[in-house]
Length: 126
Image: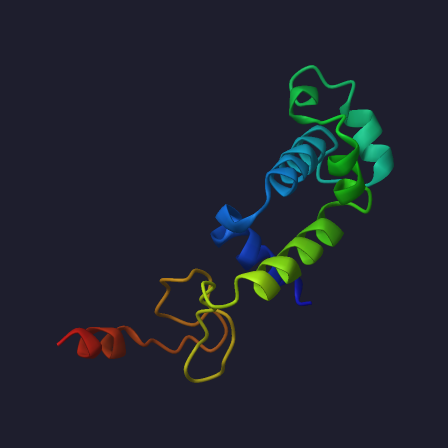
């Protein structure tokens, strides 16, 4: 899966995560803050000693299984599950010209080809 697609789904459709996935996301976010962007097992162990970010970490075995391969693997697995289980509710906003995924679900200008489709959105409402 494209890392940009995984990030898009995690960022804008996190409300479809399970409670354990939310805890794993929090665990990995705390790890990356404490370990300067790293999220591997060694970084997770290092983060436990952080007074500030250690509070975000979990000891739940289910959370640790989801987090064991780091953030990118977690994001990919979780995004795939969300797209599989909730595909009808996930809107992938793609550029009408080049089909690249837009930055946000509401964006109306392509980050790749700079095509602007604001006028199309306005015409649909009229």
